[in-house]
Length: 151
Image 1: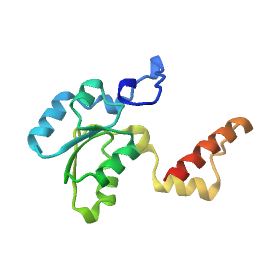
Image 2: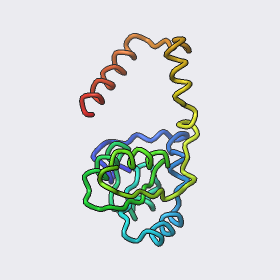
Image 3: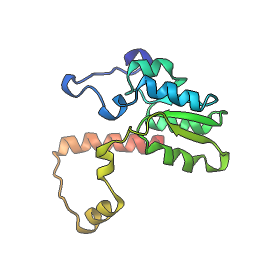
């Protein structure tokens, strides 16, 4: 992965892959390219190297969104969690761009756990209570502030 980014990647052996991104196969990509030959292939860096090698562009989730908004192309094959398709359609509605998932099976069960109803209840009842050590909270807050500045 480091050959595709300027960032240093520190893999964690027993957790070094994302099962959702690893479900996207070369066969899925080739079949999708056959169905949508004009589409540009945009994938997440957690996809396997063979998928990355066939991609036109590799970027983080926010980088994929930014790229698709700015790109002149009108059709894209998206190699990441299928939920990103909705966001891409919403953010490019006036541009008339089309997005297709490389694999319909790239669904993240962890992302599906969170719903607006659950978030609403958590805010309303302030539960569950999460306690974080002060130093860790400071570091986390700094990262959140940097993300907000970027967006």
